[in-house]
Length: 113
Length: 116
Image 1 (cartoon, rainbow over the protein chains, first blue to last red):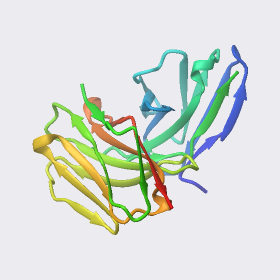
Image 2: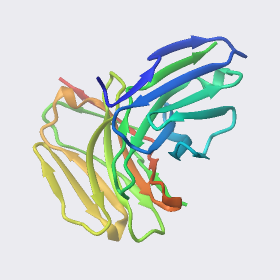
Image 3: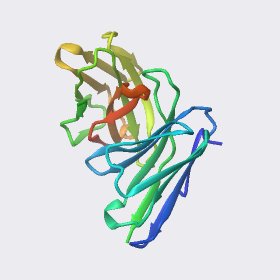
Image 4: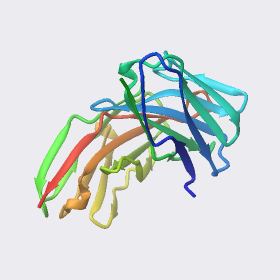
């Protein structure tokens, strides 16, 4: 099994629908992140979590919410999906040491029509 | 604010040519980390290298090499004798360690196409 698993891998949804993207990890890391990738913009941070009780907004949190159900699980929700949220979404984990690299999931490709 | 700039949006070369991907960063931190990631057409992000701000030694790994120069705030990536399998989007990233959580700040990415 992959260290960081994202589900679903691909999803098409309609405008206005609520959708949840799920992420689970087997790395035992406390720190988890959600990023969004748009063509030509690199990856932008949506939310990050130090541990189960600590959740923080990133650069582009509007329109998104998250839930850290357990150390191993970090879900991203789009409360009312809109077309400009069409993107590739990545979950990542890291250990606490500065400079620790990320372990990324395989990504969820979301299309809002 | 920390920033990473990859000025080359797309590069296209013929197989076996050498190619350099540029990365320029901005930070006020004295301690920081720089990364390169590869994103092949399949979409996943593959870690290539990490370099801390106190280590300016260049690094070579097979056909890949990295040149870190603090004086110019650059961390460039060179592929020697490129191959079609090197075709991917490459991201440079900077580790921001404020608030106890290292957040990666990414450049816009460079799409590299190696033509046979």
